[in-house]
Amino acid sequence: MLFNVPGSIAYSDHQTAVPPSLWKYRYILILLSLLGILTCYQLAVVLLLRKTIVLPASSFQGSKIVNPYQNWNGEGQEKISLHTHSNEVWFTPERHTVKEIQSEYKREGFSNLAITDYGQVSETDNPDYIRGMEWGQNLKKRHLLAIGIKKSFYDYFPVYASRENLNWVMDRMKKLGGYVIVSHPKLFDSFSREELMAIDGFQAVEVYSPFGDDPKILDSLLSQGRNIHCMASDDLHYFPENSIKSFDQPFWKDLIQTLGNQRSRKGESFLRYIVTEEGKKDQASVIASLHSGSFYCVKKFFQGADDPKVPKIFVTKENTIQVNSKERYLEIRFIGQKGEVLQVNPDTNRAEYRFQDKDSYVRLEMIALTGSILSNAIYRSN
Image 1 (cartoon, one colour):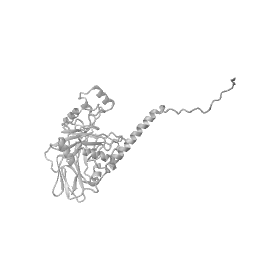
Image 2 (tube, rainbow, N blue to C red):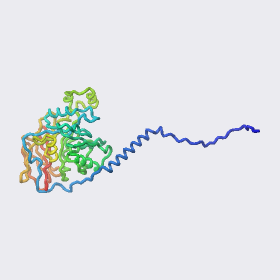
Image 3 (cartoon, rainbow, N blue to C red):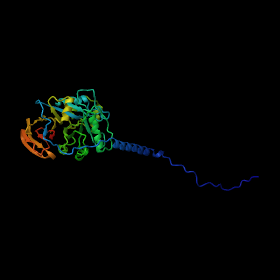
Image 4 (spheres, rainbow, N blue to C red):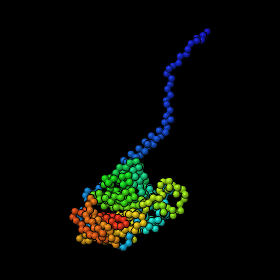
């Protein structure tokens, strides 16, 4: 016979432990995973997409003097704008149409322009303007223009790019037919002077830009023996208010431009441009002028001013630089190695300077009543 003996029932103090759920940390884990993927991607492209930098060993040398303006013909000049942005990129729908940009620049006397949208070559089947694109959507605003490029590509370095990575990008641009320009180097100091002197894939620098003017950058590069050209660009994003009011644009575009504080702004358009030889205004001719350095960079001092006239520059058999212009300049400056001012001729439309043995290159700055003009280098060569 079984008896039930009353008494307390003993339970074990060691129950099976249930692991804490990670579900409540899911957002942190997703964020960490995304950061890990981005870090791995960035590290991979930094290590793989590189090109060795090769800088010249010395400054320009030789007995021959190369003058990119020696064979200029005609009395006219062609105004060309090489840095404008349209509404054709998906994330810039509030900007102006290509037709509006073309119309406004034509009205201001421009012979041609390049549409340089971010990451794409706009309307490649349209023969009425110059092909181009702007590379760079990175955090530091390191942007590069490629004029005449046949195919676009994206910024593979959204966070960080070494100098060798930038060299790879510029080399790829040139292989795709592009003439490579460093955009607005003074914007957030995106390209310091020291960094520009340490990379070698570009052919011109925007020394006249709405984001800062600095022609002296050229002397640092030219003094290395590198035939780097000047560039003057509007970097157009929006026209001034009087132009926008004439456009037939939808209400939402007006609203976004107003909220973005892009209305009533001045100074971004029609002030900075290059000048090519008379008749050199189609894409092929402009690109050929770019590669040879046969163009001037112009910055007008204010909206509505007359265009300053560029000079003709010749080099004689005695290695004397002769400058002749239809406009009387306030000053003509001859500038040499490391930015040394070699000679200043005030209040004149003519000037001469003879190449000295110590001169590896000479460039000119003409200061007119309505603007300043920069030439590219006249330099020694073998």
